[in-house]
Length: 124
Image (tube, rainbow, N blue to C red):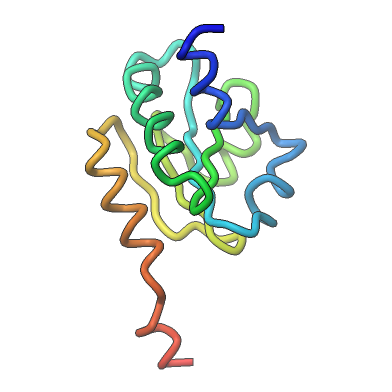
């Protein structure tokens, strides 16, 4: 088994069938990578997403959704361009990032989303 095969197991492929249980009902935040096999930028960031999945292991779950095979999900979340990364928490989208970026951009968005929501809790 190659090193790449082992690391890719951290980013779990998800379909419309298991999206609710894997993403919406997850106990931890979930980073969803909307991609397609033919998409050059998607393939370019795949190793970055895999590395982040190891870095955030236990804090954030990483999944990938092939938009060609899961068009209903792509339409539901208005995926107009790929790659698109979305961070879900408690069943809602906390943040999204469209396009291919360096790891630092994803890390910043994930870290910002993981910060306790003190301000919004005071207004409730």
